[in-house]
Length: 118
Image 1 (spheres, one colour):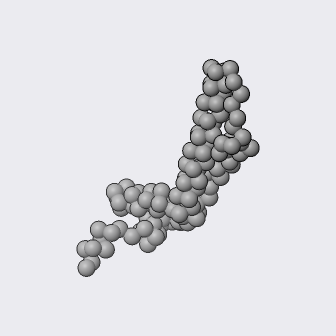
Image 2 (cartoon, one colour):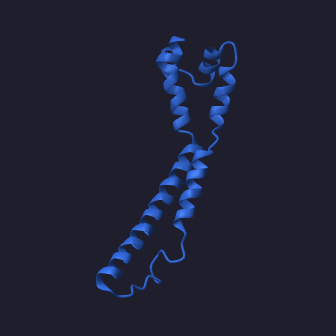
Image 3 (cartoon, helix red, strand yellow):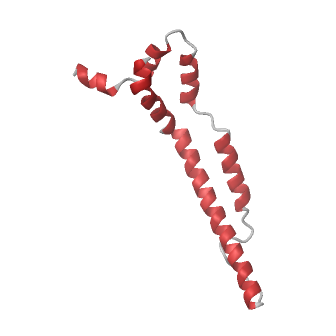
């Protein structure tokens, strides 16, 4: 258990956090959030200009008319919340075995031990 506590956890966590599926989904979520923030900010700014100047503000030529950025952000959040990582499935199978530490060592080798062998 010492391996798992001292070194293995870092390997497992690193594999989960660096998984391609997680990285791609987080990027899509960040982009959707930024786009939604831009669109909502533009809409709010337009609203204030119309109220302050008592004029009609034509937003038809802006980057946001007809774009439902809120729906895209909601879809990205749902994708993130329902994300399935293959590495987690592998870890769950290993943790149900009798000698899960040995199996975790095979999947996530300790770099320090590998260097000692050289």
